[in-house]
Amino acid sequence: MRKKHVHWLLPGNFRDIESVKNHILASVRLRAYISTLNSKMFTFSFGENMPINTDVLVIGKIGIFNLEKRGLNWINQIKITNFSRGKVILDYTDNHLMMNSPLTNFYKATLPYITTAVTPSEKMGDFLSNFWKGQVTTIYDSIEVDIIPWRDRIGQKLLWFGHSSNIQYLLDFINKNESIIDNYSLNIICNQDGIDYFNKHNKTNLNYKTLFWSKDILVKEANYCDVCIIPSNIESINKQGAGHNRLITALALGMPTIATLLPSYKMFKNYFVDIESEERLKILDDPNIFKQKLIESQKKVVPLFQNTVLNKKWQKILSI
Image (cartoon, rainbow, N blue to C red):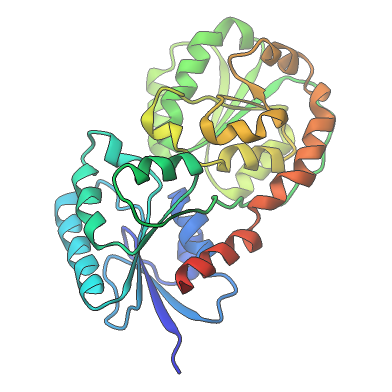
């Protein structure tokens, strides 16, 4: 008896699972790749076109490049899978159904044909349920780093990491808090688009350096830096449904963290400092006051986001 075949619709071509693991899109690395681990029941493929023997089709992040042509191609494959009684799973990681974005029509077009849906946060699941009344399951994004034990800090270097889509929030934070952080240096880990955007739009005199994202670079810089900052915009519809990955990654890296209190972060509010609170001044002045909370988070929270835990949940969804 052959294993069932799962195909992830993803933008681009992928040679193997390793190429998925190293993809620049976090949702590809943290969701598509993780779903394949330790599988005894399925075979997997990835990319623009599904093999003819596909039993389960997962709709990943489509991207905006060449959207008109790609969207038609993907919708056609979604319909074929649905009509042949295959399973169609929507991995809904960005809230385009509630935004007027170029991708909104694509996601609307998928809804009549999907079997079930997966979201990275409960809030994103709530948003999706306004448009689709089927089963929605939340599977968190995994973390990509091993736990780094606590080390004492002096509080001079800040770390920010993320995709270019978040870089404006960093600029907003710097502009608002320039007088508070002017004695600090900032290490920024991002993709090329984000680095270019920051260099163009930063008008402050903040001492900073930029680095291209990789897991190794992230771990290295976390060992040098003292406080991680994760600014966002709680008013943004899309960010209200964002997952937990950057926060949990920061905690796994052993970093005292200042972050915007997004809905998905609220359940872990004891383990970081609200970016709008006065406590941010205390942690900037002395990160070591957060030692015990950080150690506790690595015992109670971080393990919930490890690969083995989340892979089991993906395997269950693929098997239903």
